[in-house]
Length: 328
Image (cartoon, rainbow, N blue to C red):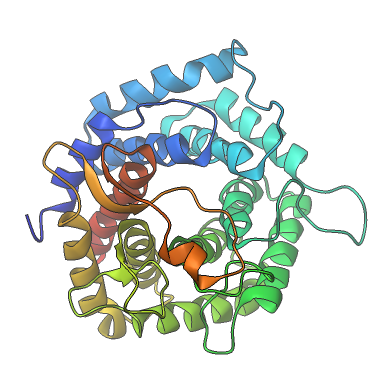
């Protein structure tokens, strides 16, 4: 199954995921991936499931913003922003903006985004919504919040070698945490205005980070559960997120194609080797909070089988690799 066509993999994953349509970043990535797949293929059938599964939130039958207020749950609104952009759903766009308003801190001088824990996860959860809404509305509140949050996170969590630690009190280069950081920077560069004042700084952080990640890719194309520990287990989500960052970065001209083409191809092959023909996945680190010891990350359970998280993140990589290949 090595080197399968991105659209073939994307169709399998979009048909299967999400199995649990809750408000969270996990189903949101699958819904957004389905909308992107419809755009890439011209096959409108891929819009049907996300429309159906998102409707209870749009109608108010299920509250989109509900306690407990967690940034990973609020990040589910990234799909509503994409429904507005890719499916013409104005009500979904309004719901995404409501979530952005809820996320942005109102107290001056404090943290720019509420409900986070200052982990690399927060970078993605916040940027995925605020960058989309900031780009579509040009409202400086969202744009400023993204810039402050990403730069503060890099100041606190990015090591001199370019990799990110998971948290100040968890000084380890967790795989998916690095993937989250890379895609948070990528989303800001993608959706925020070209004249955004913090763009040069964020682009520099992104380039340094991706270059560091490239140096830790295994010979078979995969990245590891702890990025700089080749003895740690090979892991799907960090591989898919890193491929996503590299592929879109090259396609948009932020990264040099010659420097990353081989890493993208090998990384995509590593993703496809971990996605079954039935959409099951393997080598997926389960949900992981910050931990003080490396052992905390080395011993996190691995999911092999159906998995909404792994399937959604692999779907994101599939659509990005397809777009990247079309850009050549």
